[in-house]
Length: 223
Image 1: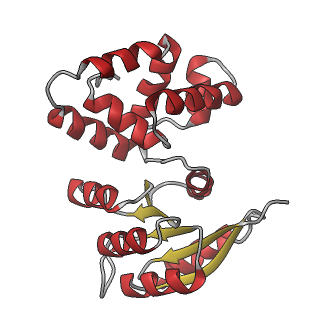
Image 2: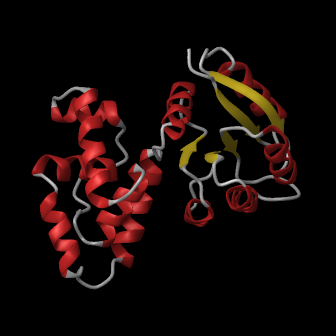
């Protein structure tokens, strides 16, 4: 059996933190190695415990989740941060993504979604709550620059029609299983498409692929 994913939980609400830890400990491939009650403690424990992933709240005393994420990613780039927040304000969403968060999940999501998101982050994916994914798409569509240079167009032509479909579904916030169900293919086929897309685009994650595609005008906001 592979080594379990080592997790540090950072949340100033003890009941939320402890309840989440108890649920995660039921999964054989997950290991909660520590709990932080504020952002400053999250940074310190991250340095001491060397987790694989920090599940980070946004609003915390002493140091916000935004600044804690920035310090962790700057000091320990191999540690990934998955945001788990009750807030979907644009200010928090984009500040955390810019600070280096790998994914953003709302606390209204069921525990199964959190477990799935942790595993996705551990594999290098960038899970976003559908509501958050929509915000990213809308913001970037407004900020989209002038027409892409010739080499961007050439890269787009290298993507197959099905790969462009997968990119569009990623932009809507769908995970691999939902994409597979939408396209009537297997999860393995979706993963193969993603591997090909990442290689052709020169990116390492779902989020990077979506952001690049939107900035270059390859995707639309159609539902």
